[in-house]
Length: 277
Image (cartoon, rainbow, N blue to C red; front, side, top):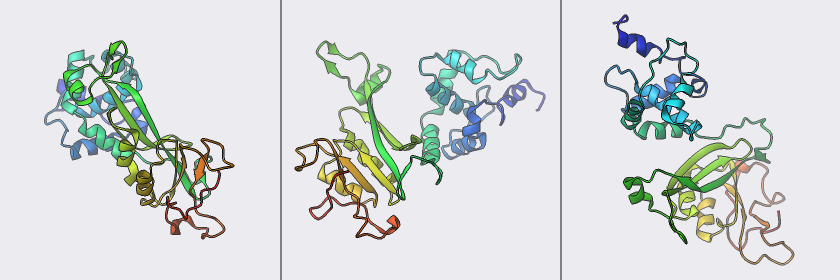
């Protein structure tokens, strides 16, 4: 019934009425993700699932702000007679009802390189430059379920206040566009999480990594993706090369065809060039 109170309140959440986020994540895309993950509301609600997606995204933009203030920012463009002001409990229930599945699917759908062919600073020769970037300082609520999964860090002064997780991302350099991301307990090494992102590499990419990613097994798995790579390695350097300088693992341009799409990635073996940068 178009004149019912529920229909009037639901109409303010129609396409085009959810603020700036809809410019980057269209409502049609969010609705498609909700359908695929089977998290679309089964009946008309004052807070439909679509609103829950944008609300959780807004929480990520304002991590130090409470639920109601984030809601105020999300709906700041409405008229004074716009959407009702929900309680914190209603917003919490909305988030729990939504769950992580639609957010995960939405990220996987939009993640990827964003540079155009003419974008400066994102390529070396014909390869798109990408890099791993990790963080182990992300704190989560001190909840029993989080502690069971992530554990807690013990310091000289005792147990740390909050459980901490390790985040590892594969990003496009220059634009910082995220190609993929994984996270989990900090008890696992960075390379453990980076291995989960290796399938996102391909022969059009040049991977730049820092020390700690120079193990033979990891380099072999990286080479099998077809991507080129440059690793800054640990250990004593060969004579004439400063400690900590990168090892070049690119094909010799004088001996290889100019088109990188016909080459395999740089292999970590005794016959590979290991010259300076």
